[in-house]
Image 1 (tube, rainbow, N blue to C red):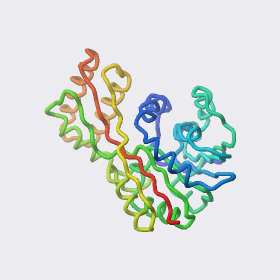
Image 2: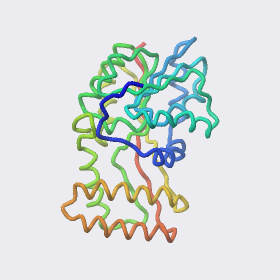
Image 3: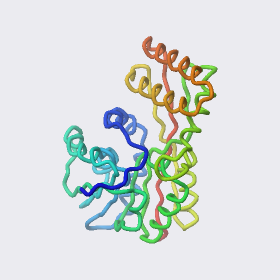
Length: 272
């Protein structure tokens, strides 16, 4: 693979492995069925943007019929190299699969496919990138399936009086430049839905929320640390963040914490 410029946002493969079961439990199965019916007969060429270690491929591959040729794109070659190992772990075939390191800021004009997919990507990009994605999908006349975009809803149980302040700092961090320019953050999925609807697409936008129970202690610890570390980069009172973090970890240790995180699944079907 030829090296490419790397956007600011990179991901720990262990985090991607940890979140995959929660992604699978949250996703809207019937949107995959609608996508399947919208794809042409014969070879189905699908491009997956920001593919990481291939979790979106693994979930969709077994829910779409026919002869599928997948092109997985990510700026991080080290994540793509782990895709085969993760496919083996989940028992998913590599047949018809190609990996490619690519700068996602520039890749849209080069796409030629029957469908564009992505997962947990839209809230990282920019307003201009979403506009280019909508334009390219309209030019190609192909469906877009964008799964698991965060929408800003975070609900801890039990509630802590500091939750609102911590979440405000966390959301402010989400809106910073993640490598593509200023990010739309939790507004990304509705924004893309509006852009595609304006180009004549039939748009489905549905909740696909994570449910993290007390028994999921590893995921809870990871979520606490991730939110706290992002919030601390913005906070004018970082000590308040550390106090909140300590309390939440204590609750996890005693099996007294659960969490719901709002996500949206978007499917847009081109005009017939």
